[in-house]
Image (cartoon, rainbow, N blue to C red; front, side):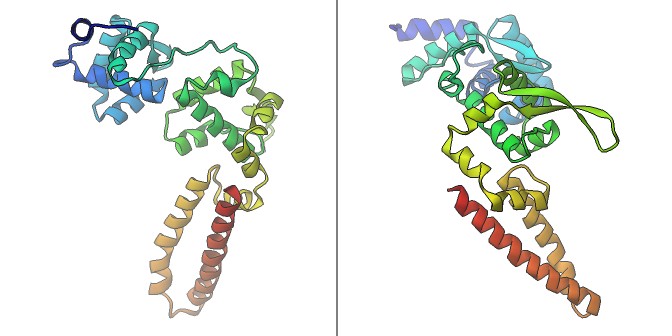
Length: 270
């Protein structure tokens, strides 16, 4: 790949003005680093208002630099990747071209040039393993800090690769509810990743997640810290009352137990 630096910069500036279209460049860089992203995620990631982001995205779509993949989720187009390739050439970086979803069976190898896709794949598999094979979209969205639309986009992508599938399950009220579950193909991938094998066999972690109603270690720790931080002043203030004193003893045992449980869960994950 051989470019004349001035010609390339002139070409790039004609596509997206360096001086007056900073937000458009920020959006391109953000999507390149994070993968397909929703408008809310782009606005938060670039520290701009949704209105400004929507306007910039409209211009990028008109220039055919990004494409709408689903809902309000956008990704780089082939032209957008080529533009960033030319820009990154001067810093020895290249933007990978996403492969088709119907590749060979080695999904992790196929996604090696798409780190965001690999990241979400492993995170979704990990969360499903810790939740008895099912994947609650609302919880996943909160745990990963991304929108439901982005979660659905990646799930549909991985469903086409037969890693996840939708099944109908009976709720407690007897109603049929559609649930996303990990397939046998997805479990095969999990059993090839050492960290996922450790998580699957980690009884301490499973118990910690059950107690805190979480699907990730970090979320469980956050909930415990919030609980003990908010409850400790109350226990201390009403320590003179006999009922509260009993609760204080229980609270102390809970603190010790969950602390040890968290430590053992962490050590067995390493």
